[in-house]
Image 1 (tube, helix red, strand yellow):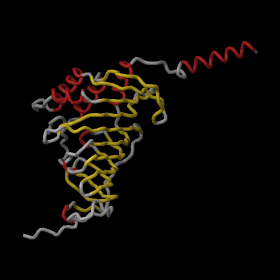
Image 2 (image 1 turned 45 degrees about the horizontal axis):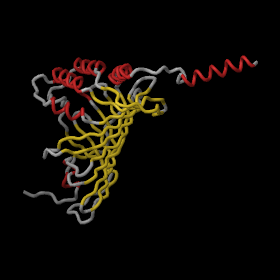
Image 3 (image 1 turned 90 degrees about the vertical axis):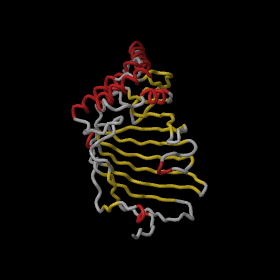
Image 4 (image 1 turned 135 degrees about the vertical axis):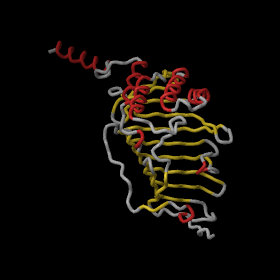
Length: 299
């Protein structure tokens, strides 16, 4: 009996020390498996937070300080040229007139997008009125053509498969620091701070550009310098190696060539759950003046 107790004790200890049967993997192996797993994703749900430090330069929210956008959504990636997604957003910002809060739901299709306001809080004294009437509005988009690094031509199914291959074969990241494993989305994950491999990123952008828009001239050096300067934290599932969470601190150049710092946090889930993204009913064409309660322009 004593020997049996000793054997069971050793077995339990080995299970604990061995991570319940999961052998530690080297980072290059994990990143290779992650790239391959994420290249096959055709459907996912996500949630996240985006925060701009200082003044916002996003056209729709110019003049707002400390802009914060939080939300969730889902997208269907099966057909790149028939990309559909749904977003629920809560937007907050400050200005000299007071605080602004906007809640909106967006459903996007290649030919048009739909949106409605679900919440609105704006400073008093503005020369227009806006209320969350929950009406669906329709706005036209650029059609089936997607802007892939400057391309204005539709991406073919063959190109879509080649893009997935490029993602699967990419080796963009190196580990900067390892943190203790965490549970995210119900599964154990590697939690690492990572950095972009600048040369690998340069090759990936060049290959993607040559695939989708070989005649387009883009500033690869600027893109590489910008993305290589970001700080990334990844949470990678230890079983299926999908990226479950990403925290990013970065910056971008405003139209006035000013550096704007931001932070963004994403959580990913339900990679295999196919859910329909349908067009809303009872839709009316978007008219900004009507929506703001402004009088119509008479000729």
